[in-house]
Length: 257
Image (cartoon, rainbow, N blue to C red; front, side, top):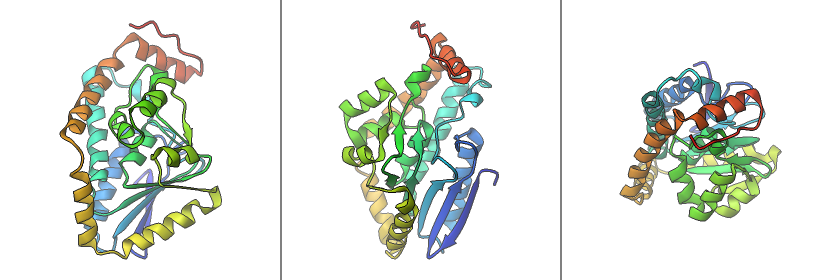
């Protein structure tokens, strides 16, 4: 695989995202995640998956430059649905999945992390969904999962302002489980993963299924509406302006068109 590596020790698969400089989630990387998780599911030596990012970030977001190669709203909607399907696979994965987040988990990076069963963060990590800054909306399930974790009011604030919260704040709002200093993150994450991996695989799978059964049908309706909005808004003049401004490193000027 071009952007992922993994090792297996003590029944824990340590998956590392390796797409410098910011581990941006391109469609190719998302496809690799799907393939690797299929491979690990079939491996009986793996009882827990721990995912983290190499370098400065967990993942600083989707690959915005890749967006410029997409010409239609329908194609953008399909891109959204593909990402949603992979992240739903992770949330319903029969083996526990833990995200160890350092640096930043923004946009698609946070959407990936929110699909994992447990999130551990560094105290100063930045977590957010800045898509509205680009004239877009989250497209990989972010609107639905963020609201489930932090509640409507905080979700609105994070979406409207595009401002990230820190790892410490993420724990306070229920978005993350525990926060650590940078040097401790992977150590503590591996300790937790190995503790989880000692449990019965059958019992773990049942627990995951039962917790997921608590998701209401409205979640899936919201996911479908998110994909449609993702495609519709992409072809707007505001989205074109937002993406151009991001690439040109300037402030966007939106006109509501």
